[in-house]
Length: 193
Image 1 (cartoon, rainbow, N blue to C red):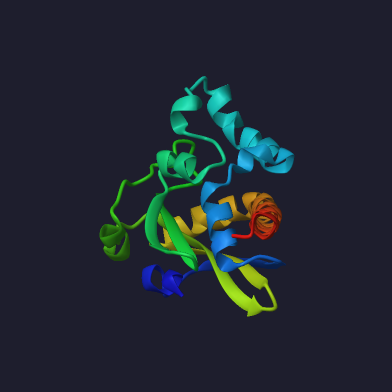
Image 2 (image 1 turned 90 degrees about the vertical axis):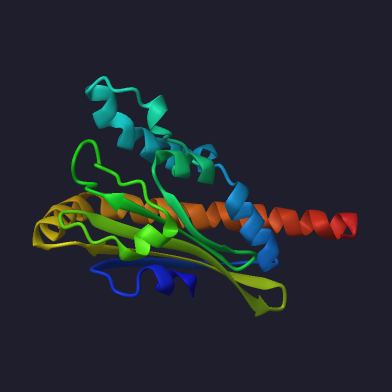
């Protein structure tokens, strides 16, 4: 798993999975091109996340909040690796429990060696494994490593509050990816591709 290359050790972890009646290629493309803001559940949770910025009268639009991979990268996530059609890995470094997140802009190589105390590092993947009979296992794992006890305390408080919502977004993400991948597979059958 590519995720292991970027975060072999972690302090917090969350995993979700599902099945799609589609090829890994359909699931990968669906995930990469997906706009999660189309999902009412995710859209509501993204709006909730924006609330502190709106209350502080900060420019939310410039933060890049949205539901596409491009939006995530504009927000500060880093594409760490992409192995089509099986997995892509993205990461984020900062102090997520603070209002401005204090995010670090890093390259994938810098992410591997980053060690500045007081920060937390997140690495997450979307993985697509063939399961035979036209099925693909959809899998996402999020790992968090805290750099020092202060970061661990700060992240633990943050995680206690956001974990249920974070898990809901990931489950919704997999549901929407499954639906889109299955639609792509049906379209491919109809068109004979």
